Structures are given as structure tokens and as C-alpha cells.
Length: 502
Image (tube, rainbow, N blue to C red; front, side, top):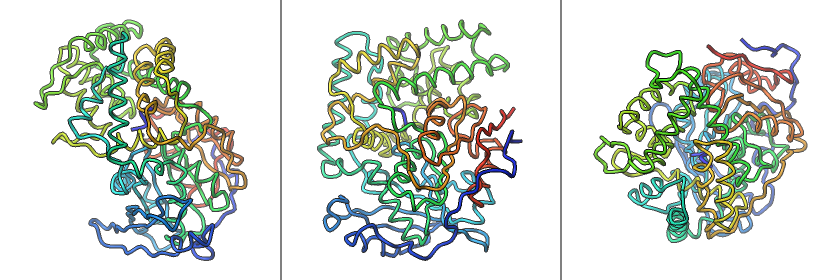
């Protein structure tokens, strides 16, 4: 999985959620006596520039043995700007592997002024990520090689080479992070969030999660339904689906749909690089580009020596499909690629995998794999990936095999998966708002519909839009509905569809 962005029917008759809106009371009550010291701790906040405060939260490495080893979770907050503070809103940008610290630092673009006024904005790096006991597996040059492996193998020799790279990745994680790997799953991150909620003094959890962050929020609600105040799950993941083949195949289809949407817009732009203004012909041109880079990499003018092969080219295209605002850059990148220059596509790809100009990486790619491989049972047979990739390629000719093979390190993962793929109901929680974008490339709209129906109190808010996630991406309708829910606990009417922004 690549999880490395005027309303039609809001009205005043929305569903009203009754839940805690202030701090205090039994906020710090622990689920067990053994966890009481964690729930009762105080964070020593220090200034960390631009009005933010930073600190550390201690949690057990293993919740089954809370008196054993501890790890530190890095936390950041921006105090509410207004006097009528409701509490804290905890953020997660997705991934898994995305830094909640960096996401919170962008609070003024992530949240509206109305939310910033009433809530402290709180971000944290989940366990295994960034500044919170990070998973480490490979060096920068090793990650360059791994990401550049042929993600669409054409014969048994290429399959063996890809499998060797996947095995080397898993063995690197075991060599550098063996003690941590069994404990980086989403359920443990959700337990950390409940400790954080209590330490912040909030009786109920107020949360905004995007992409993978919706899965983290769903798991939290299922574990702690009575501690939910308001959860916004934007760009939803369906927890009942197995990654291989179902989730990966759906994601690949989503990128195919998104690319077609990009083309429809492109044909109306003077800078569109496709010579035929016809979808089928343009898709054939893309096919030719990808096949040619499999044998003849594009030029790389960055000076770092990487070969811009089919994998890096595909990754660059995928990156731009996450956000409609990146489409002009994608037009430029493809125009260059058709002339043999892949530099802009490579720079786009680097954004998604968080590669820095000096050749180093954040640990996003490593954490992404570590969390996914522990959260879900994956096939332990390369032939199963091969069959799944072949089937996915039929439905998504440009992205199917590439996305499917991306999970291959989980075949060799040294830590046993502890998660299962099943519907999560969060029975007993107040209303939970699920936001779905109809042409979301990374988390298809069908997943938002499925999650909203699975949750016992799920409410679906839909957006007739493009790109990954909806809140704060340009729709005033979505922003107003989400803000109203966060502030007053009033959900939109069932079936609300926010119109396309033109």
C-alpha cells in the first residue's frame, strides 16, 4: 500500500451528538491499575518556536507488560487562540508513517480559524515514526535501491530480484529494530492516543485523522467507544478489507480513475502535454512512456545518480494525483518526460517517500511497512503476489502491478502480524463523521461508504471532488460541515453531498 489532501444538504436538522465538551472529571482514569502511572503523568512542555510547545509522553513498549520497558512519544501543541476553549483536537496525517509533529506545525492550513480558536492543536508522532522510537531498516542509498526496484516484473528473474529486495528490507528492519517491530501496530498507537487524551485533560477524544489516520481513529473508537467526543475520519480506509489483494487492487483502480480525471482537465489546458486530446489515446501514450522507462530510464538532472526507471516514474505520477492542486506540476513533469527528462517526476516522487536533497530519508517508508506488516495478515508466498498483480493489472493497467508488489516485504516480515481484517463497529460511541471524496485516488470513495455503514454511529459526508481527502482542500461546504461537528457535535444530514469546486 502507498499509504506513504455551498453544501447540498447540511441544514439545521442534523443529528445531535451528546458527549463531553470540556476537560476534567475522570479524564485521567486508567483502564487498569497497572496503567495508572501513565494516565496520571504530566508532560513537561517547552517552547519550540512559533507559539508551539513540545514535550514527551511515556507509554509502555508492550501494553501486556506495562511495568516493563517504556518508550517516549513526541508531542506538540499549539494553544487555542480564543478564550472559549473546548479542549484539544488531536491530528494524524496518515501514512502509516506520517509525522503528526510536522502536520501540526502546519496547523493554520490544516484547520480553520474557528477550530484554532476553540481547540489546542495537538500532533504526535505515533510509535515507530519520526521522533517516537522510530523504526530503522535501511540507509539512504539502500532505500534508493529498494524504491527503484522494478515494481512491474516481467519474468521470473525480475520477480526473484524484487523478492530479494523485499527480503533484504525485512531483514534490515529485524537487524536494526527487532525489539520494536512487534509493538508498532495501530492498536498500540490507539492506546497511546488514549493516554495522551487523558494527560491533556480531555474527558473525550476530539480527533481529525486523514487517510491511514482514519484507520487509527476507527481502531481507537472500537477500543474506547465511551471516550469518543468527536472523530472526523477523512479519506477513509475500510478495516474489513485484506491488503492483498483487495485494498491494493482498489487503490490501483483509484489511481486509474484519478489519472482519467487529470486527463479530462488537462485537455482544457494550453500546457497539456498529450498530443491527442482523447482519453484512450492519451492513456496509450502513458503506457508507452512507462514501458520505455522500464528499459531506458529518463534523464536525471539532479546529479544524484539515480536511474529514473518505471518505478520512480510511476511514483512521481502517483504523488501528483493525491492533490488536484499538483496537476499543473504533473503536466510539466509529463511534458518533460515525453522529451526524455524525468527530473520533475523524480522530485515529485521524493515528496511522497520523504527523501531529502542530501540523499537521506525520514523513516516514513520504513514505518509504513512496519505498521502495515504488523496490522494485517499478508500472503507468505510470492506466487500469491504474482497472481494478485496479474489480476490487478487487468483492472488498472498503469498502476495495478506496481501497487500490488509494493507489499512484498510483508511476506518476509520477522514479527508476527497481530491485526485482523474485520469490520469495526465502535458500539456505544457517539456519532462519528466519515468524509469521502468521490474520486479519491488513494482511499476510494467506496471505502468511506463502507466504514460509515460499519460503524454503529457512522455518518457519511460526501464530496464530489478530486484528490485525496476533502477537509481544508478547497470545499467551503466540507469545511463548514466538519467545523460544525467539531464545535457543536452536530453532524450533517445523512446523504449530504458537497458539490464540486470549480
